[in-house]
Image (cartoon, rainbow, N blue to C red; front, side):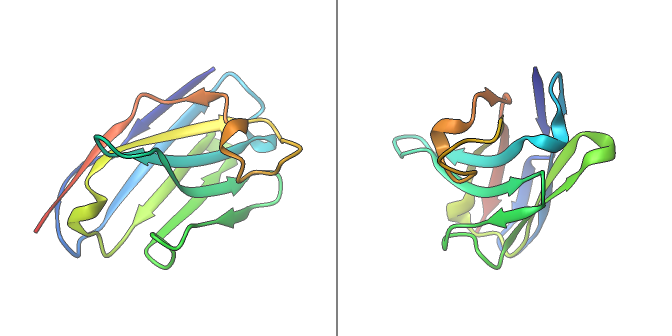
Length: 124
């Protein structure tokens, strides 16, 4: 299994970025995919979740209305469109994948496979 995250970079406050997560080695369209971030000294935060089997998504309040997760099953790729970026969004972003879990697709413990991370820096 491989997850390759890309698309990070430097952007000004209020700007936008689109992250990509290219996946291989598992039945992509049946898995749950999520984006997480973790700033130094802070707890890992799940910021966008998608249940690929039916396209259901979930966002915590911290990013709701600003971030959008989408999936292109034909390309085994998940995207994270990030708009209205703030300096506090600066950190490394990771994509992760997991099979359907009894606790649901928002259950962080269900994500078994992780990408290498891509750095997002938002300047003020």
